[in-house]
Length: 105
Image 1: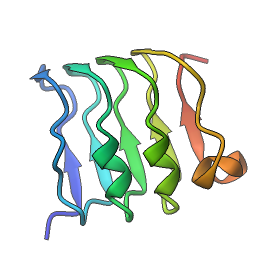
Image 2 (image 1 turned 60 degrees about the vertical axis):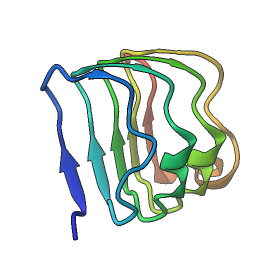
Image 3 (image 1 turned 120 degrees about the horizontal axis):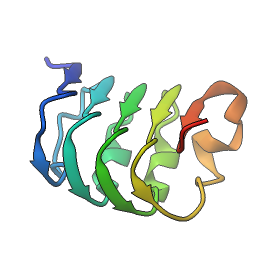
């Protein structure tokens, strides 16, 4: 079963699919030309450890459903047009255990 999906640097356009494999541990769609919002459905991939969506044209807010991803230790959303705050509950409650990158530091 597919656990890691690395599709970075491919110049993909369009939106992130709403339905993804629930067995994923890594999803890397960085350095494409994806637009739209981050689908709430990603928050139901409970084993997801790494979510890398940097260097796209994503907009909107970080979905609160990502709070459910208690296995996540890396979240890279830098270089997008996201707005609002990082959620404060769930996995985000203890940011010492997770690397959240929302802008170039």
